[in-house]
Image 1: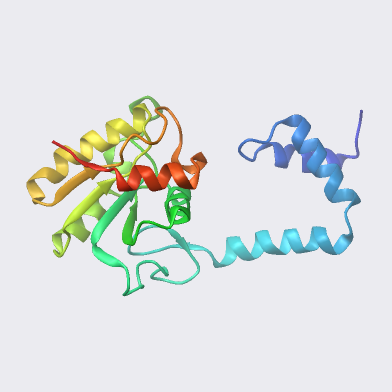
Image 2: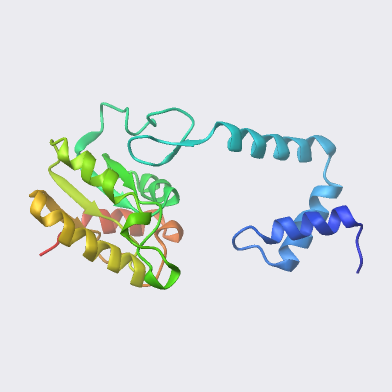
Length: 199
C-alpha cells in the first residue's frame, strides 16, 4: 500500500529504532497519525527536550540532566564500590533490582575487535583516573555475559589487578549470551548478591 511521502518518511525513521521492524514501524506511524494531535505533539516535545537536556555525567558517564548525576552526588551511596557496566541502560537495569547501593562507571561499549572497538574507544582511562584518587574497595565487573562482555571483563581484570582493589564479577544468574538490559529484576538481584571475586 502506498502512503504519502511524509508518512513513508516517518515509517523509515521509526524503522531505524532498535527492535522496530517494518511492520511495527508502519503500525506506530499509522497510530501516531490517528492519535489526537496533542498526543503526537507531547511525544515530539518529549524527544526534543530529552535530546536538548540530557548529557553524560562527567563522573560516571551515565545519562543525566544534571552534572554530576543523582547517583554520583548521592552521599548515602557507597562510593567505595564501583559497578562497571557497558551502557547507560545497564545502570537502569541494575537500579531496578533495588539491591545495589554503590556507584557506577559506564564504559559506553565493550571490546569488539571485529567491529573496530578497542580499549581506546571505551571509558577505561576515566575509570583508571577515578581509581587513582583512592578510596575504592571493590570494582564489580558487570559487563554482559556474551563474548564481548567477557573479553572486556578479562581485559579490565588484567588492567586493574595491579591497582590492588577487590575485583568481582556478577554471578551467573544472568543467562549466558543475554543482555543485562533485558534481564528481570530478580535475576539481576541474585546476580549482584552472588557476585564472586575474580581470581
